[in-house]
Amino acid sequence: MADRLRADAQRNRAALLAAAREVFAEHGLDASLDEIARRAGVGNATLYRRFPTRRDLVAEVFASQMSGYVELAETALAETDPWAAFVAYLTRLFEIQATDRGLSELLVTSRFDDDERLADLLATAQRGATQVIRRAQAAGRLRPDFARQDISLLMRANAGVLRSSAEPDAWRRYLSLVLDGLKVFKDL
Image (cartoon, rainbow, N blue to C red):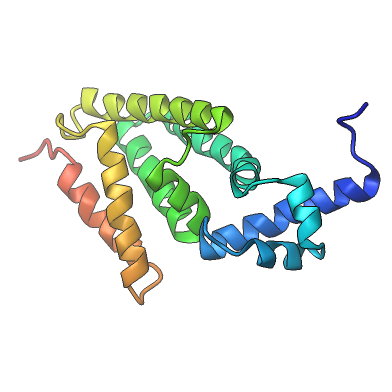
């Protein structure tokens, strides 16, 4: 019974998580906790009572979003065309990066060491990504030397594109160029 929150405490917790999602998406993982409390309409003491550390808040906010990251691979693996699955997978990853700075930073920096739930979700997502890659390679459509770790490199490069370009959709052009470089053209 001790784990149950009063109705007002539940509302405060939900407001804090919603505000944190917004603020982290806009400003990244180092966003102001004061801003999160302000947007949630609660005081800092309420924020720290519910989430004693920034890490606690980050883990709670991103656990559900990391579940979505796991589902990306599952959705790609359901696609019958392995190359289309790989393209859709990378496209969605880059889209996430472009729209959610906090999740992008979390995925790029892999700050999961101290949270078992996020680390487990990341490991599951990485296994799924490996399957997506291997299917596209087995179909002869993706370069055989491409590895799952290359996705992290591509995301880091895309983070640079997102930071430095005045064009909000520059990531789409970058992704198109990357995919052209990764694709095995059978007709050549």
